[in-house]
Length: 170
Image (cartoon, rainbow, N blue to C red):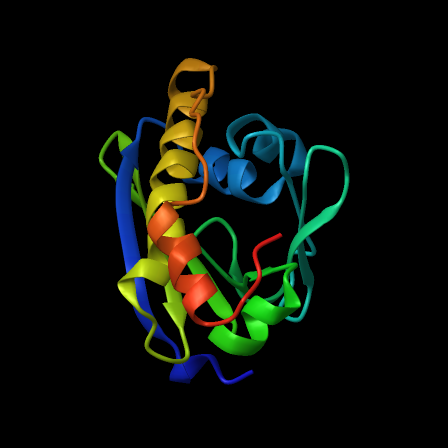
């Protein structure tokens, strides 16, 4: 996959009272991710070409991908493909990148979601709802020891946009 063709569609920056090493560990280990990613576990082979896997709380495959950049504890870039073949066929792959920078006594974490083609804002609304909840929960966990409890469902406008494209929702 040629990642130079991907254009950012969603960018979030947050500041966390932590260290780059702890933020990196939270992003890359199953034990941390289970706490802030609403029971989902992230498993990553931390090398270029390594696997990126997210499993649901019951162990089912939810997201898979490949690592494209791995520079601990500064940068991680990987593909992020939801286990929903019709979605990937129609909308293409997703690329997620995390940049971690020291910012005084805090860490600046920038998450970028990129795509290799233009996507409608209604389609992007799912990630634009989900990423802030995930990153806010990560921030809360690292700063207080407790993740956030966020109740949410896929945005109706995203589900309607998928239906218009002929993509059945699971």
